[in-house]
Amino acid sequence: MNWKTNQALQDIVADLPRFTQALTELADRLGLDIAPLDADHISLRCHQNATAERWRKGFEQCGELLSENIINGRPICLFKLREPVSVAHWQFSVVELPWPGEKRYPHEGWEHIEIVLPGETETLSARALALLSDDGLSQPGIFFKTSSPKGERERLPNPTLAVTDGKVTIKFHPWTLEEIVASEADDTTM
Image (cartoon, rainbow, N blue to C red):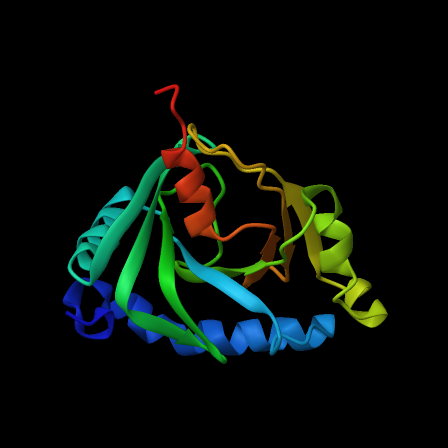
């Protein structure tokens, strides 16, 4: 089944044009040329467990569950879809579905993409910020956050730089999600 025709996913099918436009506008404000960048996956946000469960059932019919993990105290599922999600020039086959956490997002639906910048983990933020224009760095209403989310079995350090305008977010990582999931499988201590 194609995710675009799955009844359980029609709200996020309808949300995709809004997300694509908002993401393009954010990249333009930042002076970020997205064309040469490798974006690894796309992520959702929801306010209710029932919504996360409905989306999970829909994605299970349209692809395979790559991983289910507890990150920052909440379940997060990764799905590899048979039919990708198209945003700008990217084709996302991997979708991140987090259950609701303590933070409330202004919108339920598509929330961010994650761009992979391979290289030293210690220099991720500097390398990501170098892609933004000086004007983009000082835009009002633009916020930056660094973090290091980690699943229980992850072996790779996974620093993140998130840039948001409060509507959508662009995140930068040194690894693809599939590399992170593979690092979990390499854990021989379990």
